[in-house]
Image 1 (cartoon, rainbow, N blue to C red):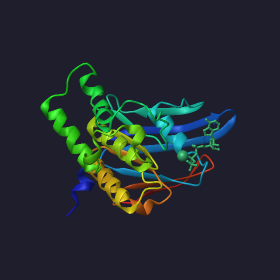
Image 2: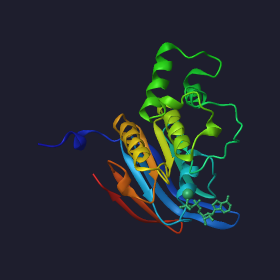
Image 3: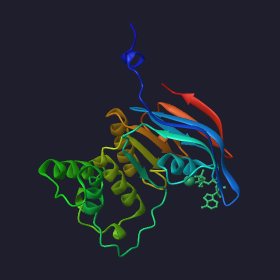
Image 4: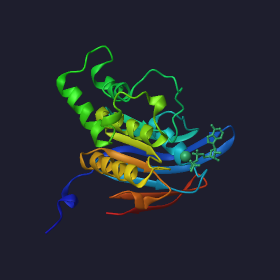
Length: 224
Ligand SMILES: Nc1ncnc2c1ncn2[C@@H]1O[C@H](COP(=O)(O)OP(=O)(O)OP(=O)(O)O)[C@@H](O)[C@H]1O
Ligand SMILES: [Mg+2]
């Protein structure tokens, strides 16, 4: 008997081919191929400076490659949680506001949230364990709490391609477990998730792995 996963067609969400990026003349990526599929978690690791953040930037369309192609399935909603988010400490935005921004792509910023949207926001905030901080200003959160708020925004965005840059770096065990659960939820509900980490063991499930070294793919593994 075949397992159902063998019978299900995989949906290609992201396809990068021969992607090369130079930062101010320094080659950060030197011709890499990357694929991400709906319902699968691709974990990207590699030493500092190997090009992991640049890869996510190119996938998100924030970094324009000098060579190669980046194709995202048409209609794909992309969420990116960057490695560090420089936000002014006095920015008058609460956790609730930040998460609400995740609905704008679908609803528009002008339309008031409906009951179902408000429930989805509350759910996402609860999933990342920030319910008690819903009204707290973003600038008054710890780094780990901020990462979790950004992840809640990605959850309400109902993004099909979720790009996470070291979402658990420098977090305590409790926060790591919350994020690992949220990542699991995203992939199991059909998103293609690409997560950068120095510690692949922190995820509950890994479907595919990619190892970068000095701007090149050193290894790819289909883990399951
Ligand atoms: N804005 C920039 N200007 C110049 N060089 C850059 C810039 N951003 C990245 N680089 C260089 O490009 C290379 C890849 O950087 P990148 O941030 O993608 O690495 P990384 O694998 O994410 O590293 P880390 O594990 O430290 O986050 C590094 O050598 C880095 O110094
Ligand atoms: Mg990085």
